Length: 119
Image 1 (cartoon, rainbow, N blue to C red):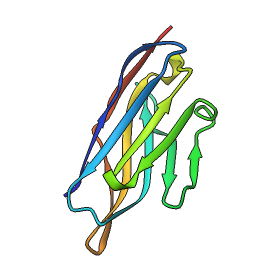
Image 2 (cartoon, rainbow, N blue to C red):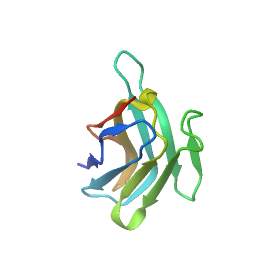
Image 3 (cartoon, helix red, strand yellow):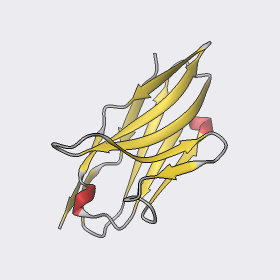
């Protein structure tokens, strides 16, 4: 079993920055896709950013130019640097990884970290 643990959320004023981290632990052979999603109250979960092995990244339009996703493969960790935060960025941010354990690939989610941006 693989566990994802997020950290770095909190309360910040509009215009501020936060850096989220998500570390995976367990019997991991490799990780393909690492990403961040968010879910605000009453809204559907949405993709924020994803980093695929090989360096390809994809961002939601709302994140482009403000957020940067990066990964540390040696430590099975993905980061999300969030700058110029807006109140609309307030949500629970969830880490997602597509992990290979032995011969199987499994999609894992973290429990989420709250980000609150005050105006």
